[in-house]
Amino acid sequence: MSTPMQTELTLPAETDDLRRVYGVFPSGVVSVCALVDGNAVGMAFSSFTSVSLDPPLVSICPAHSSRTWPSLRRAPRLGVSVLGVSQAETARRLSSRNGDRFADLEVASSEDGALFLPDAAAWIDCTVEAELRGGDHDVVLLRVQRMAMASDVDPLVFHASSFHRLDPLAGSGRG
Image 1 (spheres, rainbow, N blue to C red):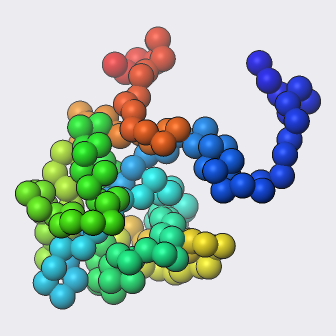
Image 2: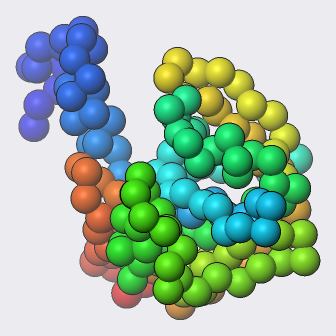
Image 3: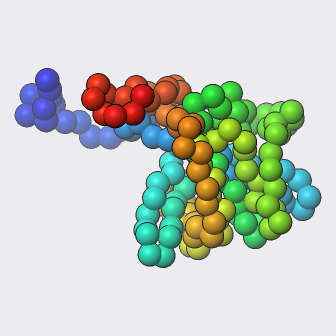
């Protein structure tokens, strides 16, 4: 096994090198969707994390280059769907820069315009709490308003630039 003592640490000089190092850390995948001016708008994020229990906050990190986030941030409510293992194609579609991301995609809408994807592992109805500039992305804090989960759906995992499913360790009690 390599440790920092056995492996030379290098400066983060190349973007590709940073992506590879960041890709070692697996993450879940969420969609953030809403109705904006009567149109379905949404995108996928692997930069999603819980932030606080009191108040209930989660975060996402949209790139400054995003053409979708400026529209999405105007919505009064955002629907966060924690994508399930069967939704890899949905994640790819919501990450696409071309085409209609919502063509033939089933969604459910809240009365406030948050959009949720069926077959997800969990759903979180949010409002934008704060935005902080962070390099070439923003850190967006979302306040949790309501939530639900599907206990029988395993989450989709993004690792090393591809989608995976969780493989429980032996003896973990879940499987």
